Image (cartoon, rainbow, N blue to C red):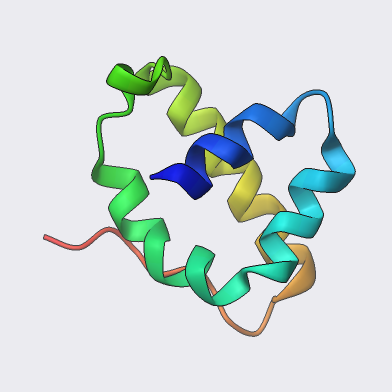
Length: 76
């Protein structure tokens, strides 16, 4: 959860840090992405709409840097 909160916190104001966090921790991003899609981050102050915005931006950056390896879909 902490990594997602960090990504959230850097996305708007520190775009390069956002991208670098995804690149530097690509394995963790890849493995955690399905969990993040299902998790309720409202206790951390991130509502569902904002969570989905961050996830969309993570996916956009991922597709640029790792087009051969799509992020995993949500699990059941």
